[in-house]
Image 1: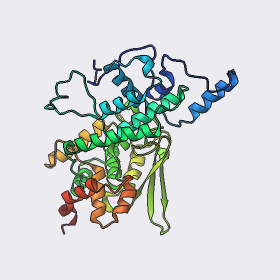
Image 2: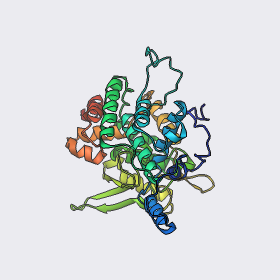
Image 3: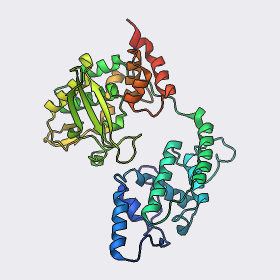
Amino acid sequence: PTDTRGHLALRTSPLRPPCEAAERIFCWRGTTPAPLGTLDDPTLQYLAHAASRASLRDTSGYGSGLRKFHLFCDIFSVPEDARLPASFAVLHSFALWAATDPAPDDPVLGDTPRPFEPVSVTVVRKYLAAVRAWHIIQGWPAPLSHDDHQRINWSLRGLANMYTSRRKPMRPPITLAMLTALQRCLQLHDPFDACVWAMASCAFFGMMRFGEVSVKSRSDFSPARHLTRKDAFFGSDLRGQPYARLDLPSAKTAQPGETQSVFLTVQGDLCPLAALYNLARVVPALATDPLFSWRDSRGNTRPMVRARAIERVNGILLAHGWGTTFGHSFRIGGASFYLSQKVDPEIVRLAGRWRSLAYETYIRAFEQVASCHLAS
């Protein structure tokens, strides 16, 4: 079965009551009672539960992994008592299924009646971490040994090699010409447009993912996961040059509870600092309000929804003949800009918060637009 968004749907079960994603790790249970982890004393059991809960500062990221695991178990008819505690065979099978993206013409997988909902190998590892945390929270030992992880990683590495050649084409970067067109076409005194411009400028010069400056929906905003006004700091460096720092409460490459910082500097007419100051002037807000927010006709402060911002940006780019099927990447555009300015690639990596040099990502992107940045 699928849900209203076309995603595979979980079977209903009293063991998995409806709750927020961050609460699944606590509220979803198994059929087998966990062994006692303390003496049989209510006070000690309460302390163990409270300490276990406090060990995880941010559990929102675990909810999707736990949902995916039970979805796999539903599809392959894994009984409830084999889900918690889960064996190596179950978790190895889960990892294989979650990372597999079968081609329609695959002689074995192409006609299988079992559905797939593939994610990247990196995400699969996060899903396994979620299942591990669920076991521990529910009073069970971690389900996988070091050797078990080695065997699963061997399989995941093989799957990654199999599907490397079938990755989606890399999105083309936003260029300075595109950014300039956006600034000229947006009405910077308008709350909505002022917000879109601040997002665009910060995403480009801060090499940020667009999901870090926007929300999926109005109700999706959470100060624990999204930037607020109090997360933006302005100061001067040792040379007296102004800069801004945005402290991300949650990021794709960050561990749960880890804060990553984005540093922005003065950048001429397209300056992100000026864009943030303009946003603060046009859309005054409370410290706990979304950083990238706008005000509707009734004066309500709203977080900027990703789809609406992209619609506005794409409308301008399309009018200038820059529309593409995949959209443009501000993050890669910013990286290619800095490389064109002969910034050390290692500095670009650190500022862009890439875990590795990732030459296949931003060097290739720079090659695509080198003439745009280097032409006199």
